[in-house]
Image 1 (cartoon, rainbow, N blue to C red):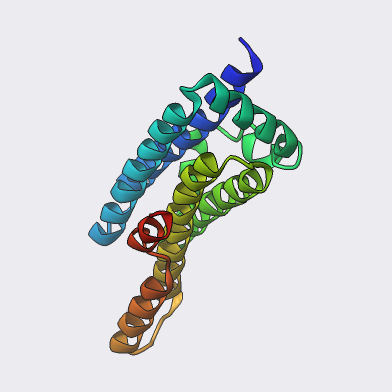
Image 2: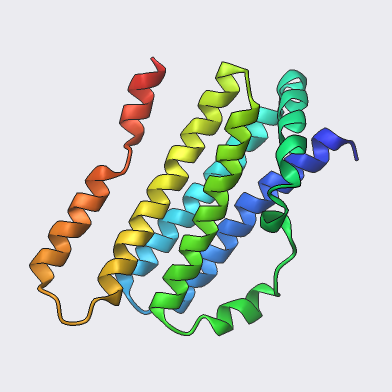
Length: 183
């Protein structure tokens, strides 16, 4: 296996493992809103894996991406470490708050990965593709963070909580804005 293939597989597996984890987390939570959120996140991670596959399909892009990943892989080794068996990990997540906290950590690692990657890329098309994924990862982070804040409050006015959730979601960068910027 060449270096291009190994980095490609590494990143695609990262996204697919994220999708699998979100599917498992969905099955663990009783709250339908959280189930819907984890379904959405799993589908997004599968889409990211497909986007990475597409980016690596050109040998020129594969070489550029491989060089960029090589520069950041040492710094980002924590993302790629083998973790505890997924089922054991999920068993340890025993509340909605810990599940959301763990999901937040996953998104943070993805944000760090793609941010580091963008700083290594000079090719504008690849930067734009990675930027799109990064915006989606940041939106995932903001959504999970807003829900986690709501979950962790005990006796707060529900109307205020909903207003804050809406404010946080409005502050997240929309994909429509990114598409406009790319035109």
